[in-house]
Structures are given as C-alpha cells and as structure tokens.
Amino acid sequence: MNTSTRQAGRTIWVATRAMALFTIVLGVVYTLVITLVGQLALPAQANGSMVTDTQGSPVGSSLIGQSFADAEGDPLPEYFQPRPSAAGDGYDGGASSGSNYGPENADLIEAITERKTQVAEFNGVAEEDVPVDAVTASSSGLDPHISPEYAAIQVARVAEERGLSVDDVRALVAAHTNGPDLGYLGASTVNVLELNLALDEREE
Image (tube, rainbow, N blue to C red; front, side, top):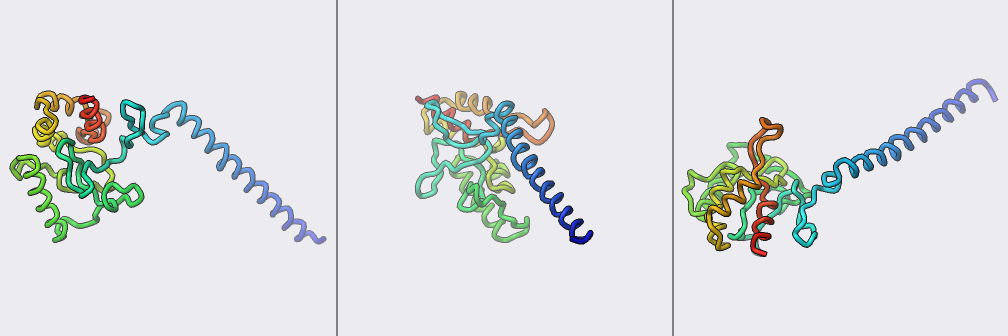
C-alpha cells in the first residue's frame, strides 16, 4: 500500500469519526438537552401553548387562531370573531400565508370593502368604526389576536346573544387584553380563543 493510499484511508476514517461524533452530539445530545430544558423551564410553550377547557380537554393553541363559525361558514354571533385568515380555507396551520396582494390589488380592495360592510352590519356599527384588523388578514394567516378596538365593537352583540350585561362582557375583554411586549413593543391585543373560552366558562 503506497503512501497516498494510506493517507486517503486515514482521511476517510477521520471524516467518518467526525461525522459520527457530530451526529451524536448535535443530532441526539443537543436535541435531548434542548427538549429537557424546554420541558423543565417552559413546559406550556414547549408543548404548543395549548389552551384547555374546564374539563382539561385541549380546545386549541393560544398561538394559533381559529374560526368561530357554523358549518356553512357564517360567524356565530355569541362569539367574538377573529380577523380574516388567508391560510388555506382559513387558519390552516399547514398553509400559513397571507394573501400576498399589494395595497392596490383590485381583488384585495373589493374583499376589504365587502368585509367592512359585513362586519359593520353584523355588529350594528357604522363602517367608519370598523378597525383595520377586522377586514385584513395577518401575514401568517394564523394570528390569534385582534385589537381592543375590534373587540370593543363586538361587545354589544355578544352581550345580547348571551344574555349578559355589556359591562360584564367589557370586563372580560379587559381581563384578556394584553399590553405591548415588554411594555412598549407592538400594540395591545386580545386573544380571541381565550376570551371566547372565558365566555363559555362563565355560563357553565
């Protein structure tokens, strides 16, 4: 066996050992360590930030929006409604996306105009009182939050449908309104799933 052959064999053996080592360290050990840290330090987040009902059954994730509509797709009046979704047929986690329409796209303008009319009629408010997030989808199509302004125009409808006082429903909205991250990043938001779950639990 000549020198070049031995050198090639040694190089292959070193490369093989390095690949095996890094596969074990980065592919197995690192994964197990991060999983363990996640389960110990942030178990809720590590397991999908699941939201459960009073029986402990999962009803969704606090990070992913969902529709509150009947089988025909009509919004249920007793629930707060989320913002529109362009992800698949709506809030499809496997098709996360916005519409990718530009602000001057004719289809987008038509859709926003129609949504504004529908939201205004559904909530009994003037079209100029309909906030932007009520008629536009988020970039992911999965945003679980709405603005406090959108929640506010829905309070009277939800209160009437559930036989609750406006003040009681408004208090629930306030209890489920989160301020900006770190106190200054972004805007205040309302998690629709958590708010609707609180409404259901109130009536149990």
